[in-house]
Image 1: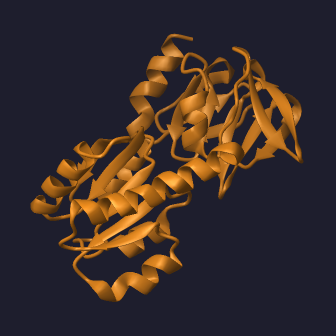
Image 2: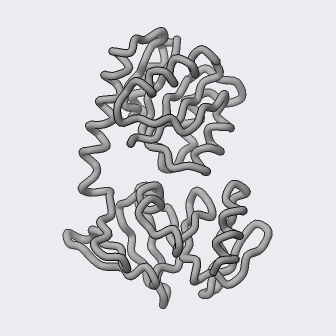
Length: 235
C-alpha cells in the first residue's frame, strides 16, 4: 500500500482527495494537514510514500516546504495556480494537478507514482533473507549485516550510514523509511527523522538525546520521545 499524506489549507480539498484516495486501489490515507508545519510533524511520525501538496498555504508555501525536506517522499502538487508548474518539475515532483481535477486525472498522476516506486524497489529496498541480518547492496554485490551489530543508522542525503562496532560503517543507497519498515521493531527504534538506533546499544536516555554504548550522542525528536522510552524500558 502507498501511504499518503494530504497537505492543503482547504477543507474541500481534503474531502475530495480523501474520496479519491479511498476509491483508488493501492492507496491509504495516513493523515491530513492544513499547513506545512503540520505536514512536517506527520512526516517525522509516520512513514509516508506520497504527499498531495498544495502550494499556496499559510505560514510556509508548498514549494518552500518541499525544498526543506532532506529525503522527500513522492510529491504530487495540487493547486489552483498554473504558474508554479515549472518550479514543480524542477523539484522533481511526480505530477502537477490543477484544481479542480477529476478522478481520472488523479488516477493518471497516481499511476506515475506507482511506476516510479516499482522501478526503485530493486535498488532501494533491503532484502532481509533471514531473521538475524540485513542484506544490502553495496559496491556491485550484497553484504550481510547482523542486526545485533547495528549500533545506529544516520540519514545522509540519498544514503544512510549504518554504524557498526569499532567505528566501522557502511554507506548504503537506501531510505530511512524503507529501513524502518524492514528492521525488526523489537531491536530498533526511530529517535529522529535522521536516526534509527539499535535498542541493545542504548546506554542512557536523556531529555533530548540518548547516549549509546560507544559514547555516540543521538538526538531525540519530541515526536519520538515516548516510543524511545518505551523501547529502552523494555530493553
